Amino acid sequence: MSAVSLFLAVSGGVTVVQSAQAADGSVVVARAMDLNSLDPARAYCDTCQIYLSAVYDTLLTLDADNKTIVPSLAEKWEVSPDVTQFTFHLNPKAKFSDGSLVTGRDVQWSLERLKNIKGGAAYLMDGLKSIEVKDQQTVVITTKAPNSEFLGILAASYAGIVNSKVATAGGANAKDDAATSDTSDGWFLAHSAGSGPFTLESYKADNELRLKRNDNYWGKAPAAGEVIMKQAADAVTQAQMLQSGAADIAMQIDPDTAATIQDPNIEFKTIPSFNFVYAAFSPIASGSPVPLSHDVREAIALAIDYKGAIDFTVGGKGSLQAAAIPNGFPGSEGLPAPVTDIDKAKALMAKAGLADGFTLALEYPSVNVYGIDLSLLAQKLQQDLAKINVRLDLKPATINVWLANLDNPGTPFTLGAFAPDYFGSAQYAQFFGMLAGDMVWGKRAGVGRTEGLDGKAQLDMFNTALAAAPQDQERAYNALGMKMIDDKIIVPILSPELVLAYRKGVTGVRYSACCNLPLGEIGIQ
Image (tube, rainbow, N blue to C red; front, side, top):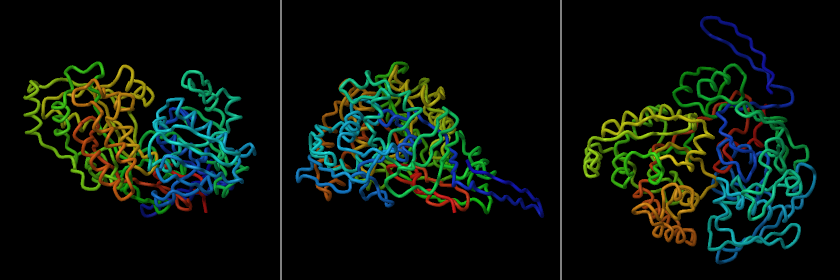
């Protein structure tokens, strides 16, 4: 942890703060930790991305441009002409934190386990057909159909490679029934089994996550000897920790809070992000007072004041986003931005026989995400929808309760947030699209059961996009994006700019589309 000496001298209204970092190069990160697990096959959250990418190396990773695939555990690879077979050659220097070599068997076990655990990120392996271990350092992965994004998928932090021998001793397995037979979730809360630059030192739920340098790391040694992530639920608390020296990096400071800080010891970097916040409907969920038909969903979407939401939550430091495909990703260019049209919304409500409106529960996680307080956004939506007589009953919940309720018993109307798992648009079609009734939001929306959501059109579009040549992918994903807009299940509200705040002397702070914050690059001068 940073050793901090504070000297406060007030002279002429100026407060001077001096901070001395710990000799071992420890770094403290303040953020609202949304961890649901520390198991690579079960974890699925923004903080999870940071942790996993620091502890579990992947076959491939993203370069700093957030688009280019570069080697990691795999030093080279070949792809078949039909984009269904991928051969990876592991770096012979790659080893786990216990000193044992990373082998093809570990790759096979880890990716099959990710698929079979059926956690939030299991969709990444939906297209997996087989994994063949040719020898200790050669693996051949075959997909069921052409998949032009598979290399990008393998750069996702959730595709981290686990030491299969060590994890198996902790109760893990990669069997077909791993979702029920694997008993290692608790073990992963106290142990790690990766080949990344850090290892898990300790974890206290809703308090802190402590990592220490992996002394057996096979790559470039991280500059920081230790990284401690501290729970800080809101932007004001994070800013106070940064100013006092209790934190070196704050990850969820909103632009309004950043503007109030006049401290020469703190630096800010504001950049566009691929993150977004959305509203979503589950038409088949119990608890809705009226059928959430397409007309009702569209009326609610038209009543939202999108530009006002950007002003209200991030002080105007954000962008409109058309579909559940982030700005800058393939297919996003030219999609129509969301609009506010109260008159049309009222007409649709009347058409549905609901001119007098109804009361609808809005359940959402009570967290600060990407600098946005979701409780504030919920209040904004409450004001907006009142204009069409939809009375929102706000129901904040902890992140774990919210996640559980999404699928059992289901939540008719909710708020959520999403950061990319890798650079590629297929993930958004899989996670948010109406492709099939066993996909994440397809299941919640009732594909095959809800009128207008049969899944066939989107599934055809999705397969076309995956098989498309690079020059044709933009058009294919654009058509898919238009269909996702038309379905009115996922309603993106805004894409906030990302504020990276850190104390002077901290280096290597950047935003990554696969890993959120690459801890292995961070140091202190």
